[in-house]
Length: 416
Image (cartoon, rainbow, N blue to C red; front, side, top):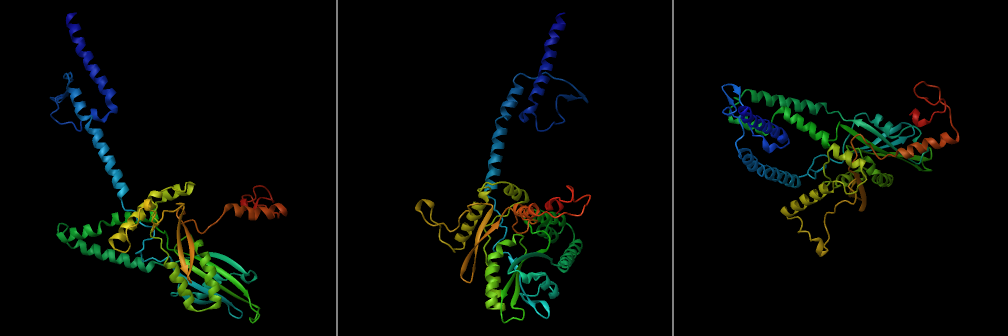
């Protein structure tokens, strides 16, 4: 009986230590980093249970517990500081070779020949001028004084892709002839990187802020002016801006002024002035937002969302100006000095301006739209445009099993 009683405290102590170990599983400081082969609990290939030494577990916990939070805090502070000091890329850098507007087209309606192309600046965008002229001057365009149209062009980049693939193949062939341990091959690998990693990087950049497929968005303005000297008593001309930006509606005020100027001076110099003005627009302080950030910004009405990115862009630009000695040190707000760069009042739009014919024209570039959103549109106006005639004088549709779900007088929006 005595031997049983003397053995039970040892058993309960073992169970207690196991229970405490299970209770401490939530704490990472209670687990050793790795189990070494010389663990005393594993001897002769069989596990043995040893009673805990008095004060040993407490010493381990006490020695490791303070170090883990402090190191994690240092790691968190370091990552936060690195994130704050990280350089933010511009969506449209100032040193980029891509232009805001690539081509400017002018077409007119000839009485005998029909739609004809007058000018393509700075060069011909396509050899089929008749097709472009017909797109710019659709049917019945002369019956309206002014009309806006949008169409798309796909630029053929097959030749450029073939050149890039040929250059990559030559580089791989030249690299395979060398020893993989040679210094030259290692230097080239460090410089160019792995092809798979490069491809992933390009895909990531395209997902985060790339323009997507090689589409050219064309904003076209048709204007009809009455002229008694013309054969049919009117002159019809159209001017179009070809850009890679899907927010092409920002160029509407410029097209209005430029087409009026072209009626007065129908020369290529008029197109050159417009071309230089729009491509001089500065969007370098517009930060590059990822797809998720754009989605969040589009779904929110908060006007200062992601304002820290705009502030970081201004800070980077100010430091660049100071290093290049192009600008004096900006005065502090306490002194009331004017600021050279201002944060946007609403982060959903980036404000800039275009100076055309010595006229400053304010431009608001949307920052939350995706490449699939073309121009400015309103679903409310679309529904109102179809609902008013449908309510006043409804026209019946032909019965269709999938379209006319509410009968012959189904709402036109549902049919669309």
